[in-house]
Image (cartoon, rainbow, N blue to C red; front, side, top):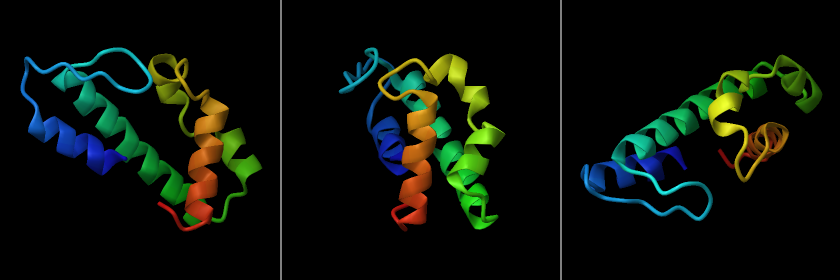
Length: 94
């Protein structure tokens, strides 16, 4: 997902409007911010999974708490985002 956001960012200019399936209409800056958040989330989750944390331990650590204010009120709630990322990583679908 982060790579897709990066491709979109590179393909658009400052006047382009992006209409996502979920979330507000965005511009180039918002696409970059979203892609950065996705890349950082992937790195955080990779580190948690590689360290052997269970889903419950990962949830207790609140690894995405810094993102909750901006990103935690959308289509996926923070707990769902964490579980989806964790299960995907554990299944080898990073």
